[in-house]
Image 1 (tube, one colour):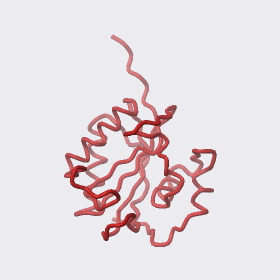
Image 2 (image 1 turned 45 degrees about the vertical axis):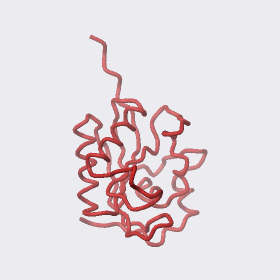
Image 3 (image 1 turned 135 degrees about the vertical axis):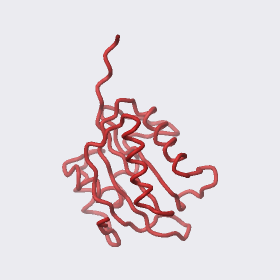
Image 4 (image 1 turned 30 degrees about the horizontal axis):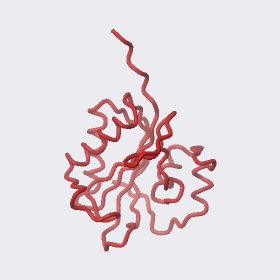
Length: 166
């Protein structure tokens, strides 16, 4: 019997601004774990202002470090499946509009991917305070694109981002 591939580290950003946001994030974490993607670290929950042209409520965001036994494409398929299970219908959404759940792969150990449906590292990773605030909480020395998350965060507006104790 062939040996299993070792799990590799990845960072995911979870977000929700429709319905019970904390429940949606918890449901996503539980489904990742049930699928064998073990959460090694989870940031606090952060309420963040919405992005995009559509009026909408604030998001709840969290970054998790996971140990993934699957590759990046299989992890993306899993994330999209979890989104569907939790009620997300991408076919009916407006880009950057409200959503019950969003799971983005930010970074995947040993992988660089540049495809239409998957880019690793996430191309806007170092431009978004709603990602960098929770990421630096659990991985203060993380770096991508030749810059540390801390340094990138220092140049961004973090007003309106607050840690939520639930």
